[in-house]
Length: 236
Image 1 (tube, one colour):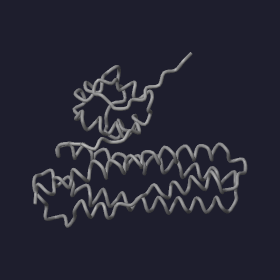
Image 2 (cartoon, one colour):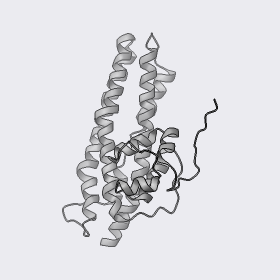
Image 3 (tube, helix red, strand yellow):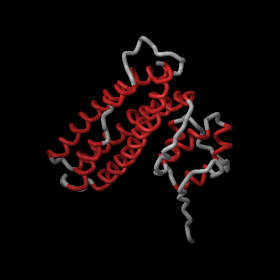
Image 4 (cartoon, rainbow, N blue to C red):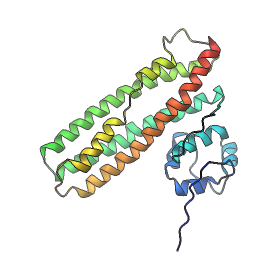
């Protein structure tokens, strides 16, 4: 039986969401991050967005990233969509801290149990340090950056924030780099001793997380920050 895979060059409001999910399971994460129902039925994107009260242009822009297509150069979203973008980013933080990081940590520990080489102990420590760095980064976004961004939607610059989109970009760290280093260690350097299943599962988790973090960064830098800069200019 021949299988047909749907790989669009550009997403249309008339595309069926279930078809996109079937070919690009990362779309399920987007729906979860937006608190949207996974029961999509046979709906087209446009009707799904209308039913669930989300802007179709924003949704298609985000879908474009989650299925791995380049963003168009002429993105134009209203300031009213900023809270939805922040909600997505905050929910992705919860996914990282309360699901993927715990999952990866447990898988690394499983590897160490069946492969008690000293290098595996170092990997556990490496990942613990990495998680501490990520928590600090996400805490900064949650308690400094996001409240400031949302304050701009109130129509005035808040005196409570000595902050700007430029500060955010300067502080923005690339938290994917250490994941890539860890993946390289598991694939090319660390000794193997009957830890095949745990190693394979660890690598799969790392790759899933790596993909979502890359999308997360693109949303911040290509969608969120330009919108914030636009609001800052309007409110000066």
